[in-house]
Image (cartoon, rainbow, N blue to C red; front, side, top):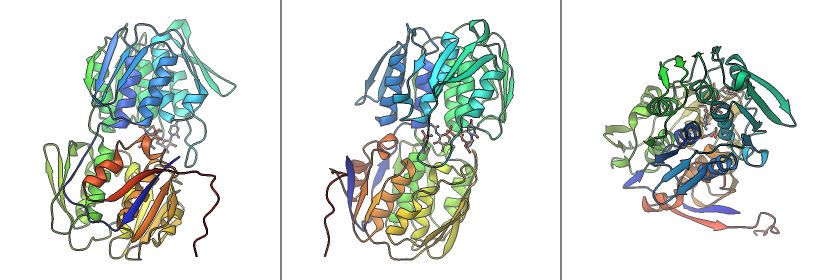
Length: 435
Ligand SMILES: CC(=O)N[C@H]1[C@@H](OP(=O)(O)OP(=O)(O)OC[C@H]2O[C@@H](n3ccc(=O)[nH]c3=O)[C@H](O)[C@@H]2O)O[C@H](CO)[C@@H](O)[C@@H]1O
Ligand SMILES: C=C(OP(=O)(O)O)C(=O)O
C-alpha cells in the first residue's frame, strides 16, 4: 500500500494547476454508451475512478482507450451487448451506478450491482430507482443487483420529484430519459455545474433538454444520440481545495496563483465565506490569485446544494479553521456524518469536536505530525493539508482513497514548496516501538 510522508511545516508559494473534473468526467463517460460510435472526452484527469469506470464500461461491450498523458478517454460504443455492471467493480466507486441509466437508455435493460457500503454513513440510491420506475422501468432486486427492464424495450418517460435533490439521481435519470419514447420531467433536480456540463454534452449529442441549471429539467426523448468529442470542465473541488490550502499555507501578503480552473463553478457561498476569512482573492480567466492575510478570521460554514457551500470542501475548510484565530463551526446539511477525518485531525493536535452534523474547531492549537489514516477522498486531502502545516513528520496512510480524486498531488504540492513524498508500506508490519 502507499502512503504520503510529509515533513512540515512548509510555506507554499507559486501556483497550483487544477485538472479536469472527476465528477463531470464520469457522467460524460457514461453518456458515451448512449451513442453508437466513438465518443472522445478530453481534459480527463488520470484518476483511479476514471480507470474503474473504464473497466465497468468495457464489461458491457465498448472499446475504451484511456490515454492518461493526453488526458483523453475514447469510448467506441458501436456494440453494447452485455448490460451488466458487476459488484467487483461497482463496489469500488459509487458513480459506476450511472451504468443503470446509461444501459437502460441504450439497451432498455440493465443489471447493475448496488454500490454497497461507503466510507462514511449511508448513501442510498432509492431516488435513482424510484425515478427510473416513474419513467417506465420495471425494477427488482436480485442477489445485490438492481435488475431493470424498460416496458416495451424503451422507457416511456414521466415525472419524478426528488427529495432531497440528488446529483447522482439527476445524472442517472437524464441518462435514461434522453432516449425515452416520451417526455420526462425531473423536479428538484441538481443544479451542480457538473450536472449542467454533462447535460450540455447530452444536448450536443442530440438530446432535447430544457432547464439545465434550474430545479426543473424537462426532457423530450429522441430515437438515439450521436457520438461527440467533448472537453471536460475543470475540477471545481480541486480548485476550492487549492484555494483553501493557499490561504492557510501560503505566505501572508504574497499572491498564490491557482490556474486552469473555472471560478464560476465554485458557487457564490464558497466565494463569500472565503472572502470572510480575510483572504484577498482576485478571480482570473483561468482561476484565482489568493493572497493570505497575516491571520485568518474563523468563518463558520454550512454545506448546501449548489450554489451553496459544497460538502466536498468541508473537510478542507475544517483544517483551515485550525490555523485561524478563534472558534468556528462546520455544519454539513447534505450528509449527517461525514466526519471520519475528525479523530485523525485530533491525532495531529487539532482542537475539534463533533456534535451531530457539526464540527466545532478551536483554532490556534499546536498542530504536530503523527501517523494518520485516510478514510475517504476529501478526508484524505484534509489530512495532507494538515500535514503541510504540522510541525514534524506526518504519515498519511491508505492514500488509495486520495488517488480517486487528485492527480499527481504530491508532485504538484512539491513544486509549490511542500516536502512530501509517496512511499510504499506494509499495513501488517510489526509495530516499531518509539522510545
Ligand atoms: C460522483 C459524484 O458526483 N459524487 C458527488 C455526488 O455524490 P452523489 O450523487 O452520491 O450525492 P447526492 O447528490 O445523490 O446526495 C445528496 C443527498 O441525497 C441523498 N440521497 C441521494 C440519492 C438517493 O437515492 N437517496 C438519497 O437520499 C444522499 O444521502 C445525500 O444526503 O454529490 C455529492 C453531494 O454534492 C458529492 O459529495 C459527491 O462528490
Ligand atoms: C464523495 C466523492 O465522490 P463519490 O461520490 O464518488 O464517493 C467526492 O468526490 O468527494
